[in-house]
Length: 219
Image (cartoon, rainbow, N blue to C red; front, side):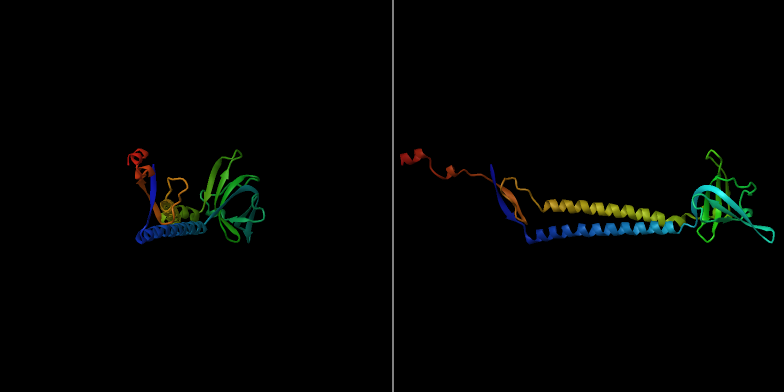
């Protein structure tokens, strides 16, 4: 059986522990800040998207003319009946020759202007399978854009990953330091004071310090 003697830590040891306990907290904040910057990059890249997409079924189409000449076509779809989508069929490739069919499914790619200009149309057959996709030069150019146009998305993902790794590493160090600051006492009823540790010492029986009864009688 052992007794434990309390050995106070030196001021230098306490200062190191204090500093190690503070640094992980700062690193956690830094990691969260990096994650926020990454989210901002992704949001900025999403807002810079030039075209939007909507899916619905054609309700009506209107051919607009000026002085008897075709000028533009307006579409009204089920998912956004209060707005009209405009396109010039002469700008489509392949050439627009077939009339629209009521309730025909369509994917519309458009610019968010007033009115909304269509840059591509994906048509579907009655069974829901895609058929012809009519595209404009602007839409094709956007597909051929340099990969640098998506740099905001890539940078955002990298920053989020780095920030998460930095924060998790700091949390791990923080928990480890906190455990080192709270040494457990192996003897029930004995608690360690802050900044102190226990060192085991051999137990000496009280009887070893006194002569036994036989020795007293002989004396």
